[in-house]
Image (cartoon, rainbow, N blue to C red; front, side, top):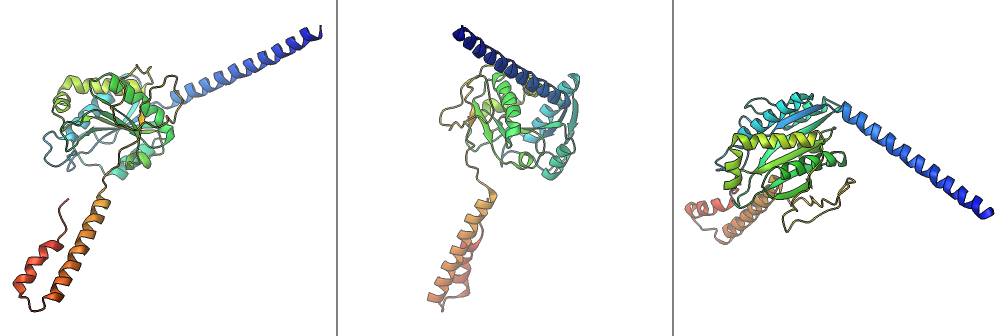
Length: 293
């Protein structure tokens, strides 16, 4: 009899624990649903514009034109789905980064999606990359990235964390999508097709709406995977370490060091050759000039 009572007591405890667990799950789901219902505003940021063409020097396809086109298509699809859409630019003009951030931060219950295309000095570089900064933006980045990769034939270059200005300074979930390399002949040719840009907008919209993410291709070889900052039901394994970025400040540091070295060398040469003519001194001056970036 005592054994039966003990078993019943254990069963009762397990039942109570299960009910509490299910109650918590329902609360979390309801809270998430309420949050998602409030987040019906999307701030869309078309990268570059106006005097800022985007890309790298001598790039044939202008990035600013394609980012605006994809952003406008995305805005139309979201409006049709019932979302409120805010555009940081709706034509070809330049918007400073702080202004883009200010527009995003003016809408508390919103998300910020920045549209870009990639570029590289290596023509073979290709694929889709998606960036986020805060952990609160990671799920949005994952949803958008996986949909875009699934809807294109480009390489999966992974979801990356990096402190770009528009991601670091926004107070709402913020994501930057690199929709392919305009310096890659194949991806540039696709990006110039209206139907392809429409497909990109479709896939980004599906990610924003939180539609189920499809199974995806693995990330390209050679990338370092990092633990996902979000819980996910499947092991997508597509969060990767961002590659080191060559900043202008580091380039200026190298240039400054070269400049100082050139001056030191010039000074030493001058002390050794006090009797040199002015024409000889002029020959040493180019070594002191800062090289072009």
